[in-house]
Image (cartoon, rainbow, N blue to C red; front, side):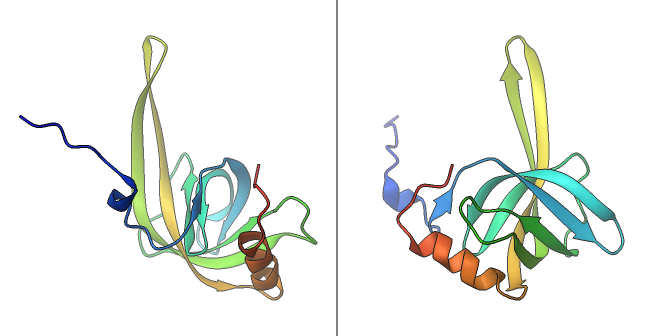
Length: 125
């Protein structure tokens, strides 16, 4: 059997993604405020690791900071995906779960801060 070699064409995502971990606060009228960790972010959305994933179709407000920015970015988003990652931490198995959010709208001047970040050539750490 011939082994398939993956190349950059296999990633069919439209937008550039940053695979960085940073804190976020997810706010929901039904589920309250939830502190979580964003693991992947793009112009269109983000993946958030959390203990109790919110139901698909839920609408939330997500708040997060960007280094060297004038303030937090606040976005209204929809829960589009559920994720569960199994991994090995030494000899013990581990598991992480989360949600995929699609940004619907940026609140106030958050859109400007967001586009400044992705338009610039700086590295997000």
